[in-house]
Length: 105
Length: 464
Image (cartoon, rainbow over all chains, first blue to last red; front, side, top):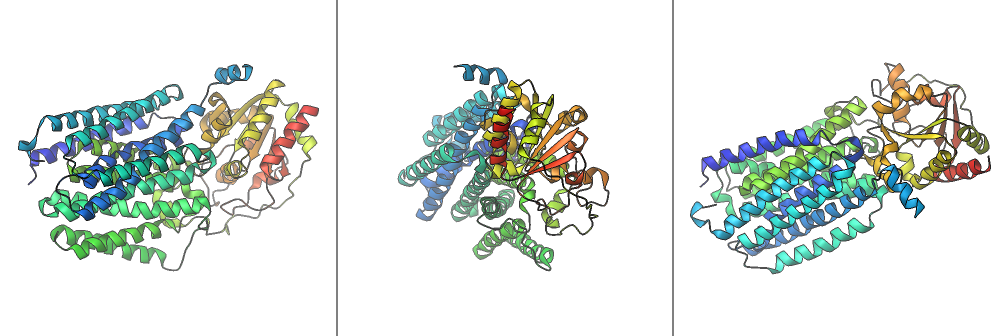
């Protein structure tokens, strides 16, 4: 059974993360809102670790492994695709000087 | 997890989770500036990698087949999407990834129900219910949103009589199942009923919403997907999941609030109002004539202007005209014209959509201006060029309190000395509202596909 102290700690983590998230994300300029969305999406692909356990860990029956397999697949698409596309977008944001230099080359 | 089972590998796993959490937060902090954002993402990628390795080492894995197959297939599809999805399709891709993330959360929830339901205390059962409901409704809701954005499903709001009552009934049934399941965790029929109703509810929630409201819907679904992941963290007792999910959830929430503000509407109004279906009876028919302008005249105006502001909208994305506008802007700059881009927060189909498109076309981000920055500059602007934008430059929002979009902050292009509107035809904009801007004496219309108009303009400017 669940230890109440662990649960209370989880609630603390949740509340502090919410507060921190608000502080950090409200500083992101509108310029970067699309990359922000795809970045947080990739980061929340961390649910992959829950899926990995379901797909392969001891004590789970076959149906759970299969559910886990699908979950691993979709979560991995988010992690790989999300980080990949965020990087592709952020690479494009250039300052004026940089573009001029490249044009000169 | 049983404290007695803590071994060295478990401690290692927990350490990687802590490192990952810190790296994620640092990455988001570095998102506050385009200079540092990219390096920040490398940190987040490192954190993710560490957490995955830690999990594989710290968990007793007995079957590697499913796990490796999932990782391999997911990586291939993910990499394919990362490399080949065009920037104009970014809203669809993001909606799809919300669906994938939420589906993963829902599936993990079902797995937990299959295996561990007897071990879950009341609080974890509650979290499991949230995980299933949010995960399932976000999955189908995001798929519908992606379908609308891709044009597979019609973008117009789908509405019928008594829709809100039907939706309310579905919602009540879903909550009823949740409560019943919470008291009777063994009732698997009710659990699966809750799951199915949540899938249905996601569809019902998004079909009445028009494409122009997608920035809000995308942000909300973003938020739900994150909260579903956070709920998973509660069920599994996993802190890094709670942190990452909460960050994602709050990011989506903040964006929804910003988008709603930029449209002067409440979230309930977006979700249940079915905007765009109610075609403007309340707008006074402005009447008057729209003045058409020839390419050469427009080019002349631009070439001899001192200050030009481009105002892009979704039409720029559909016409794929981002490169054409950059070429024109560079030509004008080489003639000594000061060129800026004014970007409305809800221009396009997702937050920041226009910025990404223009950045793709190599427009330096120092030329991209937010609404509050650019509005005071319009009175000293010689020519404002509106490209496929309509409602975000509609002066009715400011002047006519009866207008459907009254109070929505706009880019005040009508204060510029002259305005050139690039438009496909004479039809109304997405919301179906009449736009008095088009009838003003300072406004002239240049009809045609935005991309070809812009490249013809560039040619004409060269010959001036």
